[in-house]
Amino acid sequence: MANAQNNAPKTVAQNKKALHDYFVLESYEAGIELCGTEVKSVRAGRINLKDAWCSIVEGEMFVNGMHISPYDHGNIFNRDPLRVRKLLMHKREIMRLFGTTKQQGLTLIPLSVYFKKGRAKVQVGLCKGKKLYDKRDVAAKKEADRRIEREMKERSR
Image (cartoon, rainbow, N blue to C red):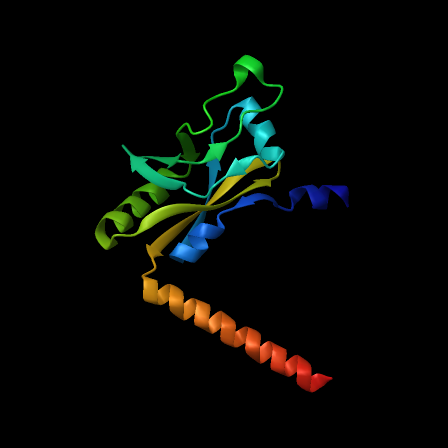
């Protein structure tokens, strides 16, 4: 039974700003290449995905702008918090994403970081930018849903 709990993904960080600014069309799971002290910082939840994005260079995928705070007890082994980190995906998937982003003007954004079977994973979203009127529509829909929920709660009393 303890083994089943270890297999469940443990979310460490989410990129809420990305969900506000982009429509997520598809999402993919990718491994991430980290150093020892970075893994300890990520496990402690000291990671920020707010301004992060992914790029594809020479058939390899990288995450830029992801901030992992230096580990407190890491001394000389700590790395630069904003360094570019390599994402691990199959070459076929990377090339498909590269073609899609170039043709359709989409972007790759890291949506969340989590641990799955003891390994750090990044959920990468293939995203399309929202316009200002799209953001207003989403806000109006949320407000309408809240109002309906409130009315239903009042009636049930």
